[in-house]
Length: 553
Image (cartoon, rainbow, N blue to C red; front, side, top):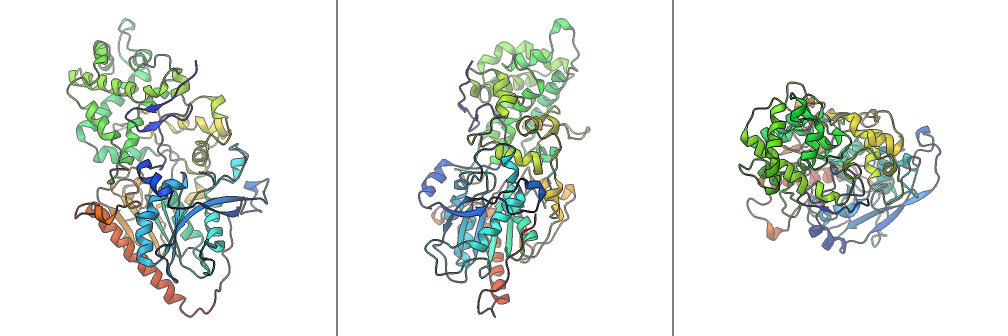
């Protein structure tokens, strides 16, 4: 039967062909914000080498060809001597970052420093595609190192249309990189690896210390989420894991098997138990999508919590499952609690109304299954999911799991969600059977990374915080913030809260939140100081001097 995928009600997402309904990519976007901005900024391209490292054997066979790297810029605040501030777009289409040029942090920084704001698209995303397809062989040029070299090449070569009379390369102009999430780490790496090209770098919500098994992702949700909601989620995971792992205590006649559980969730034909366990964590991804800007804010997680903590049945169609669900709960050794039964019925109803509604007319294995060798192997340019997944499989890991949760902690993600399970796609899509080469990104310093004019900005409640420089409970050293080495934490902030902004006529004493306003002011302060420092150091220049920074992988 042909599948008809559609928008998943309440989750604010659509299924991409067969692709599983859970993603922790930083693709935060709002058509309400992006569509008006896209028409304001013209897309430009710069021809850059596909292969910056012709002697590195990991890119063999090498290529001498070039491709068009897309970028946008805003020079409305520019005055000679101002910096170029480059927003590294990261693992999404560059247009998704354009609002920052208009009234976000890039606009605020360029206005304060008389600079030029740039959004630089990442190779293999959007329309910056170097190869004719996304086959494993052609993805060999998709590494963080090649993308960093793109940024360096841009800084050393760019001639901005309309500003041809100005030498605005990094030889004569202070360049400051900015990134958030993955590109936040990339931004930090640029300051470490290419300090002669990038005078300063800002890393927001940056996972600079990735791991293969990133079970710590859920810790922020457990710590800061509503207590009753978290307790319910932990109880669900216990019941579901006991049943899906075949540890239930009941007689055969009582029918408390994994098959019975899958049937209750409407996926009785789903072959693999771990696929259900994975699909059920979808609403947890809504935590990192919560934002102080209404147009960007996701209500997925709050709505989910409201549903599973309701004292009454939210979806009347689940009432018929009451006795069956009560037996399943009892067989898991969970307390025979009438309220837990209601909550689990609401979980089932929510799952059917959201995740499962996107599988209309589709076999659940194709819609929810991680194992699909035929579909995973597709590599034409429509398979845009392959780019970030390839980076995860080769360099970054960061698999959000439940299996790594310590035995003495109650997880909110099923322990059936393991790195091995999440790596199935690495094997089927790319024939990658080994763990990612984390050393290729950890080499820049991990969560102890520090340089002058390298700023770290994080959200207190960001689930990615354990992988970043503010992950104090996970080996990151506490630091004192300074103008030279800013180290800022947004109270109450989640993921990338510093990136976007609002118009002055929308601003009040408490909007943006005071913690965001404070961080924005500090970012403006240190950026201005960095630019002044650059000009003090280079004040005796009478002409552009210096040699280009040699690129090494």
